[in-house]
Length: 268
Image 1 (tube, rainbow, N blue to C red):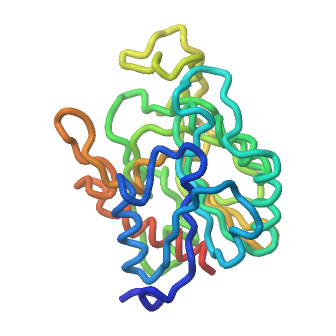
Image 2 (cartoon, rainbow, N blue to C red):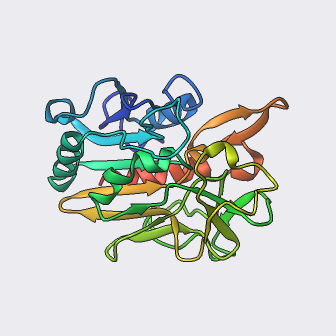
């Protein structure tokens, strides 16, 4: 039962203007299908952000924006211009909603300046569990918290699955959805290609304790959800063995409903 009538619902703008490696036709096609089945209209944005572009939009969605998809070494520059950041933050302040999804370095560094405009400090690193096991964030383990998105929507979420992203520090007025802990390290390589197991001892690292990997906040009259990993909202076949990753993974059964809960909260 779609929340709103099909083809008639709020307009969601999907960023394809910032070297995003995902499009609505690729690994994010199921994301698009799910939201359209729920009644939303989705449109790709191929141009830089402007007030004109955002006029009829309810939620601006940006996944894994990159400054330069060819360069995975430091330094990482902002994928968004200062003018775009000013426009987007003013639009959110005036009542728009932003769903900002990033990932490990250099995606994280590419949205640091944008995140900072909302008081969110994103680490340009790789958040990885020390034991190398699948990343299940759950209420049982205390890594998925009860809040408006995981509990308050009528469709409770008990666990979600992730695949190696980054962490960030949130302002006091924000709420954590899911969090890293001492079982994680956030590695800070000079070059993303340095990250392969076993991870070399000489790569600087932070403890994951105290860092969020999902959060939401109100900003002026608008709303923001930030997530530190792009895989949970995709559906893909990964690697030579075509391993399922994203919403189609058997251990990620609630990821699709989690996405709907996020969008429903942003749509209020």
